[in-house]
Length: 108
Image (cartoon, rainbow, N blue to C red; front, side):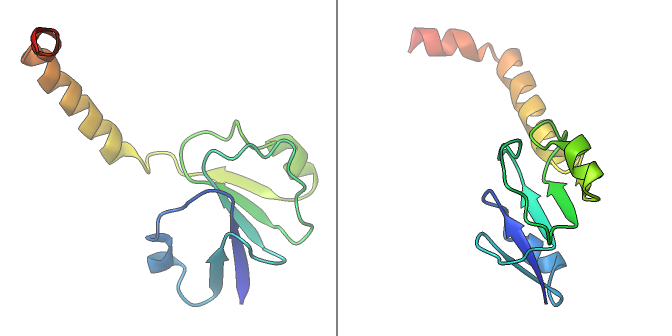
């Protein structure tokens, strides 16, 4: 069984993908991988068992990628994973702008 450590709250949909060979938790011992969203890993004491760090989102600015690469740890992200949410916010902003929502708020 491979342990995956989570440093932030991660959606339970991960269990649909990582079913059999992985145990995902926020207190995993000797993890082979780490799942992170916004946790700042620059001062984090990385366990020697870690082989990969996955950023649930776009960008890896909260992970010291160069330092981890020297240790042989693969760092990657999931760009586009939040594309639906961004689209929903965009459509909401367009709808609000077309209906002059700001004026209604001021009036109320």
